[in-house]
Amino acid sequence: MVGRMVGRRVGIIGAGAVGATAAYSLAFTGTCHEILLYDIVPEVAIGKAIDISQSTNYSPRGTVVRGVVKPEEVKDCDVVVITAGVPRKKDMTRMQLLDINAKIVKEVAQNIKKYSPNAIVLVVSNPLDVMTYVAFRVLGWERNRVIGMGGALDRARMAYQIYQKIGFGMSQVRPMVIGNHGEDMIPYPEITSIAGVPLPQLLSEEDMEDIIQKTKQGGAEIVKYLKTSAFYAPGRAVSVMVEAILSDEEKVIPSCVYLDGEYGHKDVTIGVPCVIGAKGVNKIIEIELEPKIKEKFDKAVQSVKSAIVMLEDSGFFESL
Image 1: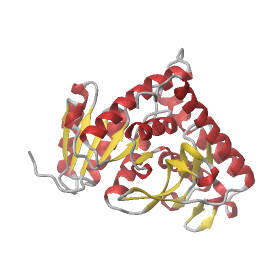
Image 2 (image 1 turned 90 degrees about the vertical axis):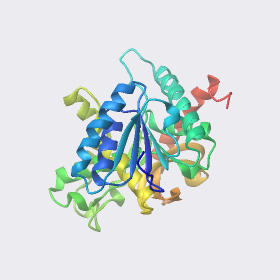
Image 3 (image 1 turned 135 degrees about the vertical axis):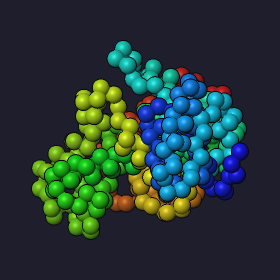
Image 4 (image 1 turned 45 degrees about the vertical axis):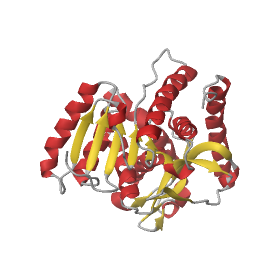
């Protein structure tokens, strides 16, 4: 086996479109030395790992990509990404989706705890904020080591919508999105800028409201055309967060984290501005929210908490 570089092994649980795209992005940029790709269908992980490996001949660094067939093979990782889960079907209730994916994330987290006890865990499975909470409770680790990816994707979608309005500075847009990764996400144009220029100085309130609504509908728009959910932007969002962790970039990325008094809330996981680096969440940034934004944020918190209560009431956490 190829020798391992310290701080450079990434495990990805779930070799579906998002997991595989994240693996490809990491391999293409040469961020890590080794990627372990695992899926409940072993052939999928092995086949995609071979395909991605063959692409690395054209990458800046040699990245080893391996498909593994057993959970215990995802071991000694520095970062583990959880993308495993099922999408919601037409006849499925919210509680059924919660129950199925919570059980999947619970099993995955238990394996991570056993085989990669020093890892930082990045949760991508939906409903993201609740699955991040499940992973946090199951792992029982320091809160800085369990992070939900949602905000990194939502801010990228907001940047796209801003560019559609303005037509310049796509790579210079610095959006901010807080709240949960779902109906109660809060795109925050008032503190968004383009190369330091505040967005409110470039767009009308009507335009900004349009950006907010289109950002919130960003995932649904893609489903409308593809008949399936997005994977390029989510996969790249994952790789950006992994890069920030492995390189200790101390990069400000809105992320789903466990709050313990910040923003006036406790025992909930939700998206807020964070400094992402070698510790995972190096720092939670508390910004003063405008009254209308605070009201929306509190509503988003209650939405996540209501789902957590549903799991609590079902006895989900009793065996922990």
